[in-house]
Image (cartoon, rainbow, N blue to C red):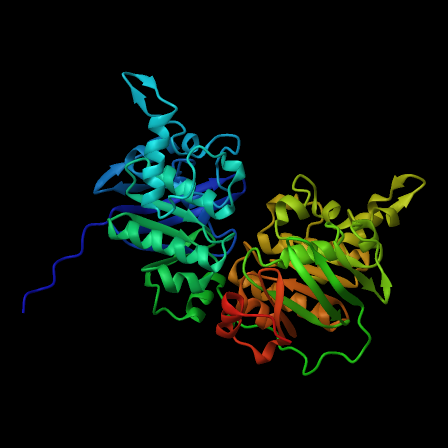
Length: 509
């Protein structure tokens, strides 16, 4: 029997990488090895060092120590341009595209096609861009169209086309599926499979462990700036083991126990024939104190639009919203907030937080009137009340003066929830509450949300992750193309049933 051929030499080796910032050691001797044609998944909680490591790999940060080998040769990645010239491309979660430029101009930005030394911005750029888009399975994207007019999924394809416009051999993808629906995720995985079949390596970062199972070959886990495990098989390593490595403790990736039955009390929130033309058909819903109701559906099914209409950020074209039996003024956020509604929006950083302000100001911003004394804000009362609200949710660090931008995703979300607790909110509207939150912090958020409901808060929840909806909610409304196609207690549904309904369902009672 002939011996097995030796494995190919690593494409990339990072050895003993260290990086410090004032007061913080972000990387402490990290090792990472990536083989040609593999998908190597990088896992870790927020603050574990993932972002710093990929910025070192992208040439955006210079390491304080350690060595990098590329194709067997030692290299110094002195800039993003240097990394790109070697064949290393990075696609960040916050896509760095220029919305006012066309697809073709973005793809070739910084290395425009030239003829006889002159830049050619027209047909040549569009032709080469069209070829790249076809290679990625999206010939329908017009190279001449402005990037600002594209969907999130198509923008990501443009970022990939830009990477492939170089002779790329390794692509780093940071949370690439965060804004995609299941069909778009499937297409992303097809593209990754095609790239790896051509020998291109992928470093894939995601908080979604089910994605790691589907797409990953090997896993490296970071914790507190160290690689606590490297080269684990992605498909066969138990989830509990990965979570324990990430958090340093055995965290059951489970949801809090739900009550046996919803409270037998009158509804606090009612939707009666609520609709918006072109977005969602009439919805009827009664939501009781202490109950969590989930909205499940694909992107574009009307989930977020329903939440925003309930909150008054959109005006309905039919129907009404009632709180304690009294109709709210349509399209009025002020009326909704005064009635006791609070929204934690999907785009937390852009829509829910004041990123340049402190934790205190982010928590108190919806309740400033209660701290006003003759036109002046009582800063001590504001700070003390905000701190009491954040301590109730175990926000870390316990520092009300900390800039909100320095907190992890999970703690930023706790600050948004604390804002509505301080306001005396009675109905909490949650849109993608754990987006960008690591596994350990998710478990904490799930416990917080369930505890708030147990204390009498009514919760209306939207999530693109079906297991999250089924695990948290007491009752689920399944949406398809703007219509409620099924309503049932969460314990009567499973993920396959919900996916069947959102893909092929028809309205049922």
